[in-house]
Length: 135
Image 1 (cartoon, rainbow, N blue to C red):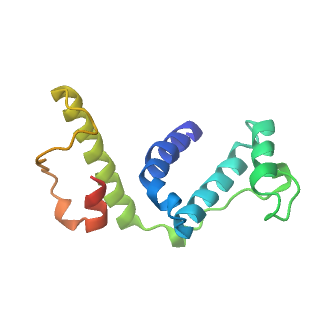
Image 2 (image 1 turned 180 degrees about the horizontal axis):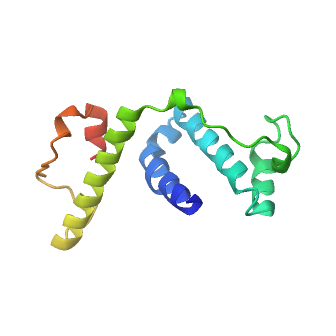
């Protein structure tokens, strides 16, 4: 579960947000910071030394606790979960996976632009333009 989260964070969020990081987008950086903070807290019981090192390097100046092992366990804030966005993002990720699979099968490299792509997802019209751009 933790490994899946790390994989999703690095291979989806960080890759897709590189330009935002380079531009100094505070929202993108804050989201990444919070994700790493929460990940560090969750990892602490399993990888105590690695988690402590990350805590000391990234969070010691902004946190009230001297050690990750003295910090409170993270709590879920259901109020900030956007179910519609989560559902739409799941669709976007699935479409990207299918697109990559089709490219691999056709031996078309990922960086080679396509002339067109046909998408047969019934929810496609419900997606915001920003999410469509991710596909």
